[in-house]
Length: 92
Length: 291
Image (cartoon, chains in turn cyan, green):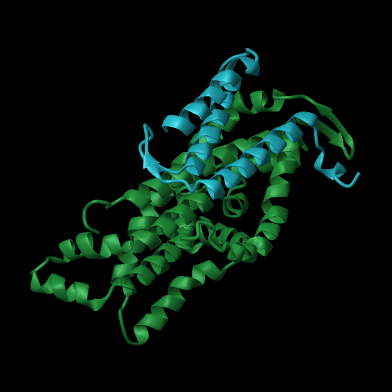
């Protein structure tokens, strides 16, 4: 197949599809209801896009910390990381 | 009012998006795919999940390389930014000196990076190098960058500062030249001291270019590879093995693509988050003080 050289696996394909769907949804949302920058519990003025960025990056670091510090399954921390993204998106 | 603005101008960004997709996004996605597999050869791979990340995160040598990298980038920023500003302030403002100093300042930037390493190898050699022989024979201080970690660090830092301070100076100079004369006249009328002029006029007005300078210098010094690789090869011991040198050792030396992929992504995330923080901090510096 033409994409063989990229060594796709099912989990990474799901990850990127989800990421692109979220970005597409954010674009549609921004077009329908233009965002207003505001200040939440984060120490800076943010738009939903900035909050999504901060949420995803910190969620990745939460996963990495879990991997580095414990031997437990990643699925335990996954709901907390997703919850953190939602928290940042709403009140951040 | 029409809520739907004409957004067709965005189509003009399509070529850039295509180029970025091929130069950055698709390779990055490939690295993500590598990082969850153990790759033996073309077409032969085994899905290992997060195993590679676990190995990388618990690699003591990687932790050492990371702290070394932070120390190096921190020192580089602490020295290069003030020195660059000082150079820019000292550069002539009119006459033939302007062109002359601009050309002299730009010279180190024009030399290929691996040549810089070679130049400095010769420059600091204790037997024939101008710097090395001077320090060893005239000052009587034993200096050998191939044997002593501290000497290797001093040499690498000096090389980096010599190579890249001109960039900061040129950016700061451009920022200084863009300040209208009326600001200086107003400062003079108020009887402002040179320090006050610098602190309240020049520095705030240079914020934009200094943001770029800090970000560029941070990213470049954090990714530094060619110069220390040629100069010290990461030695003596591991004392100048920075992150990228260690990464190349893993990816090319041991052909450990999965581990190298996981390593690259963590490296990328650290740079991304630090650049975001720097950008936010520098964007907000001085807000609310009327500057």
